[in-house]
Image (cartoon, rainbow, N blue to C red; front, side):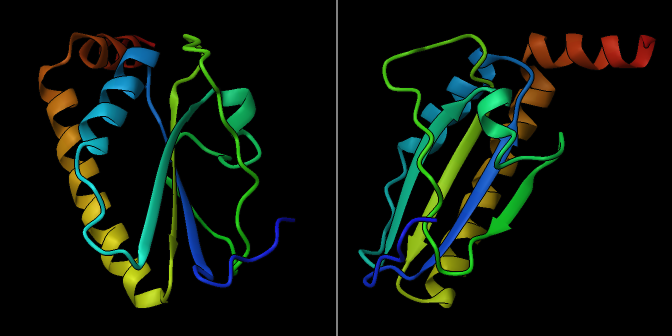
Length: 135
């Protein structure tokens, strides 16, 4: 397990599985434009494949995993824009639990908007819903 960063002892990893790499990449780009407003919080985004993300995500739903003050093992995909990278992994580090909570609340609100737009307007999401309904 990685050592705790003494400047940012509070951390959280959020993984969001999406149906396609294109949607995951679009969500990353949409969320990345908003910089963290506080220097007391650091945030990083990566796209990972379900195989890589299995150590961090155990279900097809949004999973939040508190890290009890320890930084998560870094999973990066480098310059590999693999079509398998369909999980948006967001890592937060903050100086206090309060700052972490405030930042993550803002992120979840923004993520909800992004997912809502995808659900309403994206053909991939609509096709996936129809495939699941038809079984």
